[in-house]
Amino acid sequence: MLRKAACASLFFVGLAVAAYAADVRMSRLNTWELTFSSNPPRVINLTEGTTNTIFTYVCYEVKNDTSQEIDFYPAIQIESENGIVATAGVYPGAEAEISKRCGRDMLGFSKIIGIIKPGETKKGLAVFKGVDAEAKKLLLYVSGLSGDFTVNQGKDGGLVVMYRTFKATYYRPGDEWHLEIDPVTLESSEWVWRE
Image 1 (tube, helix red, strand yellow):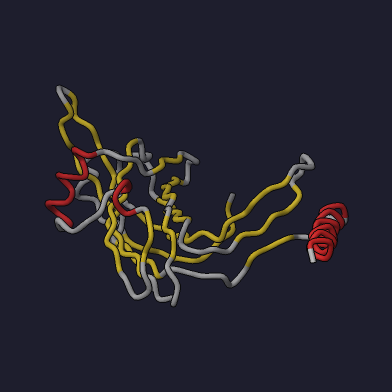
Image 2 (cartoon, rainbow, N blue to C red):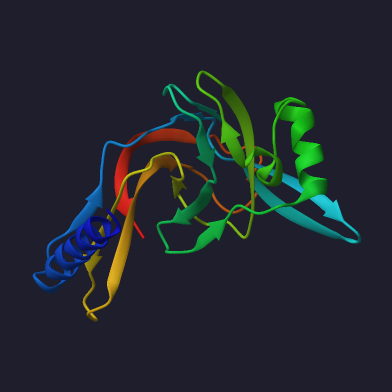
């Protein structure tokens, strides 16, 4: 029995090596997907010590419509049309102030990660520093909502893992002044493949 298991393991390892050598794409598709919805990115100006700091935040909901428990570990970024990228982080002071606006049941990044049970909905809060103040377009990327990924050979010969990622494009008119009152509207949303 042990010999059969060892032979089967060698067979599958051989297939994986042959697929890599032949540049065949490996993938895991249609595994699971969480339902995501969010409000447009908003801005709040807070005092930290003696300085004013501008935070951008997104209030969102994520729901598990599958029949299995899902480990939810999101990575959320905002990218401007100028190529400036900001990643959501943990800012307890800002989260406390923003929760007064969005609702006390909002979970910051450090509290929302973990298992979401079937049928369960969690409300999250993503907080960013350094979002491009001059941007007219904000691209919101949320990974961790799908179990789908592909592995391809990169231009340098190494492996590149691409994850199925939710993307929402928002339009923000105005300039870098008074960002708190600029309206932000959703232009489009789609699933994309991203590293």
